[in-house]
Amino acid sequence: MSKKRELTRREMVQLAGAGAAAVAGAPAFLKARADNNQVQFGMIGTGSRGTYLLKHLRGVDNGHCAALCDVWEPSLDEAASTIGTNPKKYKDYRDLLSDKNVDAVLIAVPLYKHFPVTKDALLAGKNVFCEKSLVFKQEEVHELRELANSRPKQTLQVGLQRRYSQFYQAVKQMVDKGTLGTVTHMRGQWHRNTVAKDPWNKPIPPGRTDKEQNWRKYREFSGGLTAELGSHQMDVADWMFGSPFEHVIGLGGQDFIHDGRDIFDNIQLIFKYPQGRKFLYSSITTNGSLDMLRSERREFGEEILGTDGSVHITLGGDDFPATAMWFPEPPKPQVSGAKKENVKAGATIATGAAAKGLPVFLGKDQIDLQNDSFINREMKFARHWLANKGIMMPEEDKNPVDVELSSFFDDCRTGNRPKSDLEVGLADSAGVILANRAMYEERRVYYNEINQPPKKA
Image (cartoon, rainbow, N blue to C red; front, side, top):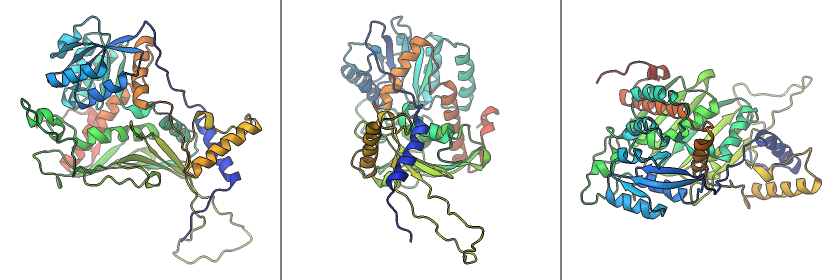
């Protein structure tokens, strides 16, 4: 068996230079700026996700929370305390939409309500940030496209924060510039072990039902694992491959959690893209192991596989940063035409040992072999060496959740198109709808089915 070998200094600098060339154009983070022209926003839906966003919004100073809305008063009061801006509180979101002091709304209601609330918000003239998935039903894809396109001056953004990550932007450029060769496959997973604690099976407080408190467990309200988790990584596949998939097959099961839910507790999906490319996706609820990123992280991540190398990447969270590791393929063997090698028939001979992964570097750590001074180049090499040894890893300047929120407010003011715009959100929603259909109906489902009239139940 081949042993892993250490990269030489020359190889590391050469590879780092290639990576720097690939990511040198990675856009810098937008900085939230404090001024007198803050976007006045309201939050519709102050459950777990809405409150999470409010915690991040406290540090984003180009927007100001003017109003909150939720049907559950304890959640509404907690959210108001979290944001700390003394917002108006509403129980009916239509009353919030009538508030002339609100310029934009952030929507974090249960999935089945995304479209009706987004529709009403657009009709009320508001800019809209809606959490993924953007819509729940097939017919909503087309109705929302028509409505949003008829109101081009209003910003519509979907909550797919990987689009706002420096690491993901850098890796996208590596893919586009051929640093990984021809990308043929991708793999994504979001594995959790919910035996001890299931975030989708919370205690039911007095005055609430299980369907109100734990709506993610039921198909009538939820897209299950596909929507709540897989949608993030399905969007990454569309982004990296540069197109929607052609068809999807999948297998889901209700095998390990028996609490009245009718969504699957484990899913396996295969998406076929143009030119034979494939994306494999897995989400389970019985184990949180992640076999990417040197197995130093858990639960979720993506692997992008090309003919010249691969990248393992994950977004991270509030307590652990995003990270990306680049694994170049071993150099191709040099074969002399004058010398014949002894080859065993039917056997595959290993021709190169695996190289250790290199972190994907950003900003100040990019090596410019032509323009860097000797001292700067050596300092950058030292940082690369430390990272290669696992002593110091590159980190993003800001959490991509903060960046997507700040960017939304900037786009509301400038009219710029969001990175996760209407079409990104609708393609992602279509993927969720069709992938679930493939599993529920146990058949191959084609992407163009999203444009066909839905079958009557």
